[in-house]
Image 1 (cartoon, rainbow, N blue to C red):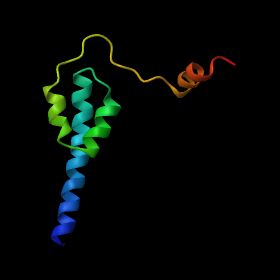
Image 2 (cartoon, helix red, strand yellow):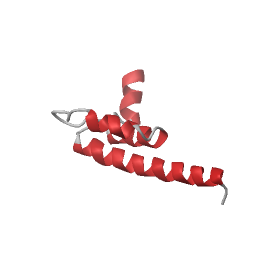
Image 3 (cartoon, rainbow, N blue to C red):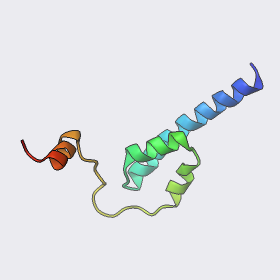
Image 4 (cartoon, helix red, strand yellow):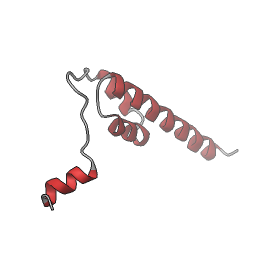
Length: 77
């Protein structure tokens, strides 16, 4: 296997591991898990930033559903 292929595989394993850890840490710190999973996959070192952030107090942030967004933008039918 070439060196380039080894780097690609290493980056893939690192990205997948970082996204899993990002989801776990975001859940522990009461943050939006899908946001941190995505950023952990795209930029694995961002998981270290998540570790430095304090835990959110109160309920976990929730993204509105597509129906709620549509109702907000267009009003009730």
